[in-house]
Amino acid sequence: MSAASCVGRKSAVEEEDASELRLGADFADAHCLSMAEVKIVQTSKLEDDAERGEETSTTRTRVFEKTKAYCERFTGSTSAAAAQTIRNLLQDAGLHDFEGAVISNLKPVDFDEAKTLVPSLDVEDREFTEESIQAMLDEMANVRKFE
Image (cartoon, rainbow, N blue to C red):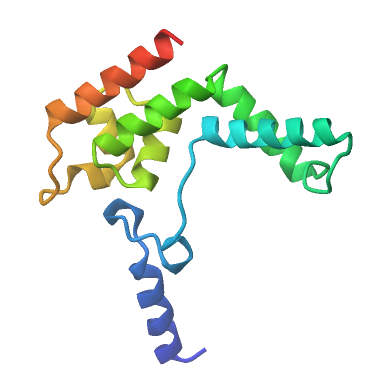
């Protein structure tokens, strides 16, 4: 491999940086879901199949089953209403879908933990304050607590 091709690869890799919300071309038009939202989509698909009385090839895969088990294990009993409320809180705070999904999935309890897990929250030119992020995290904890 030539030196020129190695340099080209390095610059391609450097273009993607989640800490700066540069997620690459594959994610340019994509929306990120939390595990609770993935669980809701999967449950809905299974219910649709049950209503029709047939399984589709989508729900019979190992990947589908393993994803379902993983989401059930780590989301607990998050209701659709709670997932929607949390999604609204994250969007109202002005978070990127990726940031919202990470925060929703990892459930940080304070600003320092959130900015460690999601470094893009601590960028100076964004409008986030420690107080606004902490208020959002507290509200998310309340939603989960009282569902």
